[in-house]
Image (cartoon, rainbow, N blue to C red):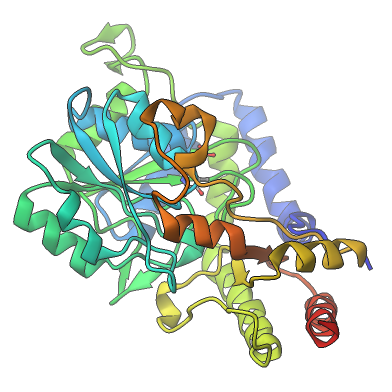
Amino acid sequence: MNVPFLDLSPGHKAISSEINVAINKVIDKSCYILGDEVSSFEKSYASYSGVSFAVGVANGLDAIILILKSLNIGPGDEVIVPSNTYIATWMAVSNVGATVIPVEPCFDTCNLDPSLIEAKITHKTKAIIPVHLYGRIANMHEILSLATKYNIHVIEDNAQAHGALLDGKKSGSFGIANATSFYPGKNLGCMGDGGAVTTDNEDIYLKIKAFRNYGSHIKYINNIIGINSRLDEMQAAILNVKLKYLDDWNIKRREITTFYDSRLKWIDNLILPDNTQELSMVSHVYQVRTSKRNELQSFLQNKGIQTLIHYPIPPHQQKAYGHLGYRIGDYPVAEKISSMTLSLPLYPFMKESTTEFVCTSILSFFNKT
Ligand SMILES: *Cc1c(COP(=O)(O)O)cnc(C)c1O
């Protein structure tokens, strides 16, 4: 049996007639940039996220960059980022000329360890960017109280946790302004690139709305130097349909997670995801850890099961950050996670027989070894 890591087609099939109507409506109107679809998606996504404003932008990286710019964060400033995140979080900071200050995650949750943040705060620290990795909300209570204590901003990188709830509050509603991505494989994904900023702060909202469109609120009136980072009408029309299904599809993701948990919990040398806070988890990725990761991955590959590693090389070991002079051992938790982690196939509408096949294969690997 061939099992892809991610199959977007069954999800698409389930709603394809609605998507086709939405796409055709855009074509009939022939309005492709900053029209009704974008503004209506911005309203719905803000309301879904429990914030006053959302701005559609071109992708998740730009969403973080635009937030940093709107807060005047740049050269000479420091921004705290997780040492084990997807590299976009780091690159957003680097792209505005600020300095990344990596902080290690907790090994269990893979999210920022709040107890290590304080030691990294200096008079130059302007913001902390917690990432809700794999769909699990970071420890926002402690991060927010530290930020308040030192008067620094919190910006959530919410690219992996659309719809996650912590104490009844949605991810993307905790920071001063928060970034997300609608890359096709995310929990809420479009059919190309897309992203958004969510915020309760009207000043930031207005600034980012101008920044994403050449610094302009009114056509041909440019008040600041901006960029072109707009969510397009086609993607917004698709997102307007898909947003309605997000909660339902997150439930499907959780069901697969529960299935994996129940079948795999008997294996000694396999660490399962920390699911202690059920509702704060939207199962973007089902990540297991084992000292036999490479062997397990090739064993599954031979059975036709595709897995991925999130992420094989931590940002501090990437050539792009070679100039910072980090060495192996500088961020041991991030390094340990990257050496042990394996993400199993998981997507809405994955068949139970498929999940069962993945589990049986993993069980047989560990029985043999
Ligand atoms: C996907 C992702 C991003 C960036 O999103 P793009 O839309 O691809 O730019 C940022 N941060 C994290 C944690 C992500 O997973």
